[in-house]
Length: 370
Ligand SMILES: *Cc1c(COP(=O)(O)O)cnc(C)c1O
Image (cartoon, rainbow, N blue to C red; front, side, top):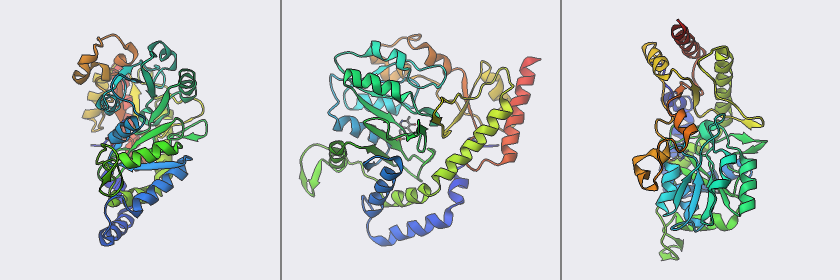
């Protein structure tokens, strides 16, 4: 089976470097929020071109702590996309605010700027665009709307470490941005981790307090906070991966270009669109088709793994039933839950495996047309 992603191979290629770094942490006597975490925060802030980066326990917490630090909660509304991982909406509800889902654009599958304004009310406090599958959302249009209506923009950049929008890094495009270092993300560790990036010093300071029980001075607590910290071990692993991330993202780009060129003449299978000025980092490579069931079944027979991102929109999740959305209310996102499928994509996918994936997709289309 050619797997969607191969983490054993990814971490295996840098095993010696990782073990050296892990051993240093083991023998350092410092395990949580120490010098490695500080170094990671500095390196990431510098790389993304922001003044602050604050490490937390995971990407979901990054969203929750950011919303909380901005004082967003009960009675507030936050606009976001229904076509994302559950955590984006969950974080909004977790702080007591109401997620307001706005349909996506059918080309990039990210939040549609044309549909945002009609959902803005006096209760709206923020917009959370998601940089989906490794491609940034329409940030200029979203930032303009936010400015006009005095809203915050919080990027959900969990799938887009290294992505760029008009020459600027994902993570530097709004008021704040949230990253996840879950193992399968482009920059991931061998466990959980997360980060908030911002150029707002007050926000960074508040999150630094919130992540450690609302405490500035040990055993003195200014407010009710969280326990949401990054471990030194994960910071050391992430610092090691950070040295390779540009190359890994480039390798993803090369594979994507090959997929695109080899599949472009197909009638029933469409490669992902890339907006002009956007650097896509292909967290996932999702193809669009009206024949998903037939094609993925054929690929399974040919030992090519596929995945479905996402099989259910957020507004139709059981957990959000109370919000009162009906089937058909966000038609573009809903239609895509039936049409997209991911094919193998990771930096170490061999040319031979790529060829097998390409051949299997081409054959599946031939079978469809006869
Ligand atoms: C992975 C992900 C999250 C959550 O990150 P965790 O580290 O798993 O908590 C949030 N939003 C999006 C878009 C994600 O892909």
